[in-house]
Length: 439
Ligand code: URA
Figure 1 (cartoon, helix red, strand yellow):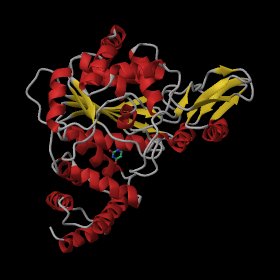
Figure 2 (figure 1 turned 90 degrees about the vertical axis):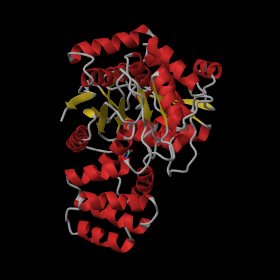
Figure 3 (figure 1 turned 45 degrees about the horizontal axis):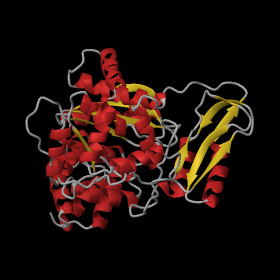
Figure 4 (figure 1 turned 180 degrees about the horizontal axis):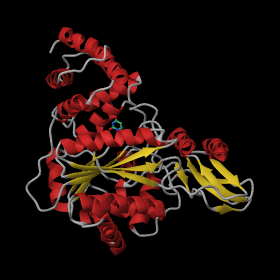
């Protein structure tokens, strides 16, 4: 397809007309091979942002993006292929304990994860804080590790879903990221390239999520569940609150450490709850459990057994981690240059802990990236975060800041004071998991 022909499609979408699936397939192929220039695709993205795509168009876009590169091919095996995807949030480290747990529950997990941008953390950035751990694997190495160990967490190979890499960079630069059909196609094209049997999606809403309201998160969840199922992957979504951070730690290394705590059964209850919930749904989706109550019990018992903790080490070694260096890093109270504390100005009950402020502070400490190419500091972050419903005395710790230097830590402490609400009266209880979207 030439730029001239593509122009007529841009005009059609600008006028709100429906595109033919075949035309979508053709222009994604032409864009991936460089025949369509970025400026024309940017115009198409903006037209889609305002006019939307219907189900058939979104499906065609997703499949064309999936087919723009390699797909993972696995040998026949009794272990179902499953994965989980989160739309991203502060302190969201669920994938780290979940993947070895799923391997212990008899699944194969080829998790292709991403990097963080802005305030949302990325699983690959968290894993980069583990000495020696490799996230760049070939397609053959991914398949071999999944067959042997049961799980892998790595980045997309250069040849997987290249259309998404190019489109996402353009969306990022043209203000067209928050579009439900574009997010749906971007996420699902990558997950469909893994050739999964079942997928669970954690769709977040709130101050620190892509989707600020519950209603928008539900619309995105429904679109992804419908399309995933249409494409032959048993897909479910859970809607979860991202007004406050998940767990008590946020920042790359601090989140790895909290994930290990979760695998050792001494992590925060909200993290464990979400890990168990994702695993339980996948047990139901693959007919390994008959009821959600039973599935939750099975997942919790496996976590308690300590086997997922051993599987975690096995995965680390398989991906080149230096286990002695990792263990001595775990023993250190902090790996950042300085640790400062944020203290309560008065006695009372915690009523708020704003995930957005916490995310912005971590990004500005160097723990997140402003642009795709910025380097990040894996050791900075915030831990010992108090949670709504907890009581504090005047002067007690609200959280700790791990920073590269005292000026940065002092600036962070000052900003974090406004993240917490303290009241003499207890605040409302926060329900982390709100609803499951089945279809
Ligand atoms: N994550 C993705 O991979 N793509 C999007 O469009 C949004 C979040």
